Image 1 (spheres, rainbow, N blue to C red):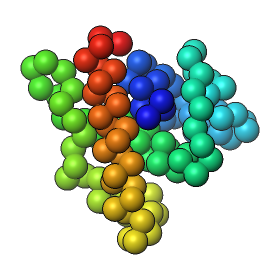
Image 2 (image 1 turned 180 degrees about the vertical axis):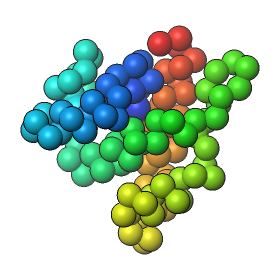
Image 3 (image 1 turned 45 degrees about the vertical axis):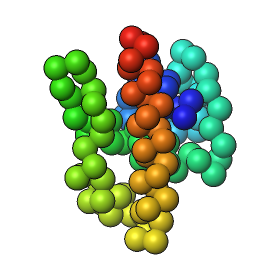
Image 4 (image 1 turned 60 degrees about the horizontal axis):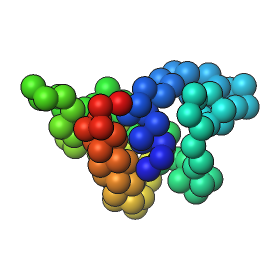
Length: 106
């Protein structure tokens, strides 16, 4: 959830994270405010960041992720069918953390 909060505060873009990964850097090494990600959770964070353009926006700002695109995105990213439910739950947790951060005005 720290990763989602950092993203909501304006952390690095998906492209910046990918470039940093090519250089052997972890996400917390390229952000202004470091955060820890357990290695087992890193795949979920990568998917969350890659879905950064899939948010529904209302008059008051972000209202949540566009759930309609998530199954197709997970398939395109090569997530095994049996794992997609687990990824969806992780995305929801991060979505809620990001929404809380947006409400704080960051």
